[in-house]
Image (tube, one colour):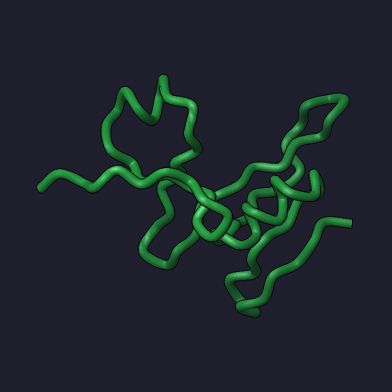
Length: 85
């Protein structure tokens, strides 16, 4: 079954994943969320590059991260959004 093409909008800023080429070479952001609606997020030090943490983002946390330029995460244990300080 072919996935219907979905363009990003204000309500849904993420495109549907249609093909390998679209994901790797396209211009639309099409993240692959897991069954719980989350994606892993590796946070690194901006200067040194060392890994600081592995966190998770849901769609809203990813949208807020993109909009604000500040990292937002989803707490899997508390089921709450949080912002990096």
